[in-house]
Amino acid sequence: MTASSQHGIIFNIQRFAIHDGPGIRTTVFFKGCPLRCWWCHNPESHKILPEKFDGCNLRRGFDQSFSMDKDEIGKEISVDELMNEISKDRVFYEESSGGVTFSGGEPLMQPEFLIESLKSCKAVGIHSTIDTSGYASFDAIKDAAAYTDLFLFDLKLMNDDVHEKYTGVSNQIILKNLVELDQLGKKIIIRIPIVPEITDTNENLFAIRGFIYYLNNVIEVNLLPYHRAGEGKYIKYGRENKMGDTVSPERKNLENIRDFFSETKYKVKIGG
Ligand code: SF4
Image (cartoon, rainbow, N blue to C red; front, side, top):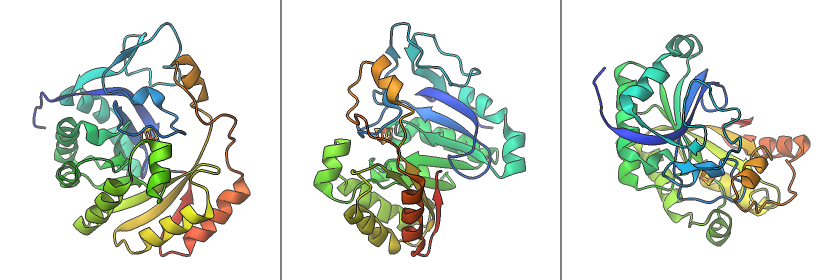
């Protein structure tokens, strides 16, 4: 393995993840995201720098092997330190055709750290996946694509005004990046958050289906049902939760959406 002193800021390493790409994976959560999705269940990811908080329990459920100060979210880590963590579960990746997923937050907000990490994975034969909002410079996406195996690419809202209202940014760069990534020939799994009355409207789902139909390298579509697991974090972290009493979509509704997307050429799955 080539030694790398490149550093980045992450806020969790989740081992034995099974919803972030194929097989058993280690998911590395990068800090920092340019979006502010109303339904985000990781609000602690938004700011790129480590953050102090007072005595709350935000780290409950975090991987205990990943040590941070107990009153801090986010930690600077070198690529070599990260690779030491990732390599611990190599036997599970090999047995399950798994690997590592770089998630967040938005991993492409720290492109140098991400690319050095991808290179290190590639050098030792560990399958890598990037879980992205698609809101990044295409140069960064292209550079990362040279060293990764798979993209999990979120598609949220096709109407630009509605996208901006619910995520804080325009979708134009995201859609353009998706088309250009597809043209690079990289494997892509499209992930659609199913959020009642926001992304889950006939108009939006029709528009997404129509858009992805013409892509050539999408291998799967994942429907990610809204859930309230992050609710407590908004309270503990002093952030406004704009979702109010919104509840998770019903199973029958998700099955209908799955059937609707199954009319495309793609395999469709409820969940990641
Ligand atoms: S892109 Fe993902 S991490 Fe960023 S705000 Fe939206 S849901 Fe949260």
